[in-house]
Length: 378
Length: 194
Image 1 (cartoon, each protein chain N blue to C red):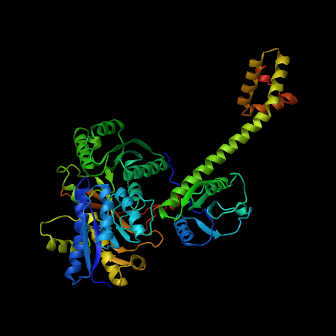
Image 2: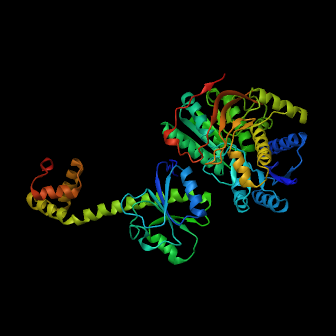
Image 3: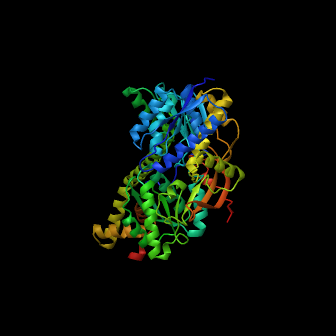
């Protein structure tokens, strides 16, 4: 194996999802920090920051591949950015390590999907919500494919359950004018609100929902929760104090996961970054992606993407997210489902957990979906 | 907006093409979408047709598919590298409702399935509706004869006679043509409105 293998890290640390991108980048950095600490030197990360500019993702990927010779890129947060980068990665037969939850309906041989698709987040989330809060819901989302497709699927799940969609509204990425949506929600009285907004829109929405609940207790989180599949600990630092407390979010990892592995992981991070921070799902997932990439290259003795991919697919991996297995048919990882309730300490209390679920990106099994077994942990 | 997520689990697909990297990628992606796949490079038999046909439109010849003139009994997808109008026309004549360009990209397959399926359903529904309308058109003389009979029997005008027939058909949940045939045959006298 060459001793100067470069791994591209493509995350945006500014813009509407900057908080998430910074955590993702730090997660990857921490994996390389640990790699060097154990004496590793052959693999080096190369960072590119597209600053949330869609066109810059393509420039970044091109520069990482052509100028730096990267065969592997760990990166992209939004589906829009991922779809921008994929054709180039395919053309150069590289491997894109994607680790965010996304809306599904993709299975590319040149991508490893480590962040989960709807049968791993939205569907189990609805399995929990419908018996408790009914099937009359209000859907909000960012005005691009994530928001559109998550809400389309939510509508299908609600209609299948005999319920209704009381409203469906979209906001452009940086829009924070949420008053009209809030007024509509107050009038329609949903049992819960599915929030697929991103960044500042999402924060403004959560703050406005809290203000609504303050004047009308029907909208307190215990009566009408705002639920999402992508809210992170690092974002809770940006939202007004207490505004999101009680709301729900699905993820494969939370800082509060109480296992010996996670306690040890958080201790190692505290030693590396003494400033004190909570570990988010994106941090943990980017760390897992980078570590998996490093270990798979070491195991296969080559950076050749096809061989690395085969190495990843060929066995189980012990990771921060538990024992991780990637399905050779779909290139998607099986992931645990956790439901977190936001607490007053800018973190999530895990209230439901399910063992790793295999990904079904095209929902081929949805017609015969098994009855879920939920384990209530608090 | 389509509400139900398209699901192809359990479908049988036949790929009519020579084996190469394209058909290999196609087969893999179709399998993960839940389809069972057969590949062959000889004409498709008219018996035991699959649920979906994917055909190499660059190489395909006229007898490859056992139907003509867009009368495809199942959704058809053309796999096409050429831009030659003759080849595109050949694909249209086989009933293709979608194209997967060569080289085959994984991301092109599911959208083509959904599109070809939707177009096939739409065509089938329209063909059924046209056949129905043609049948009714053929029976117009029967309706005309029934109206003439009601007019002369009851001394009423065209409009009234047609009204009787239409209301009677609605009440009995029959096509107006069928009721007209009964009236002419004498087995129906429309007594209740007499």
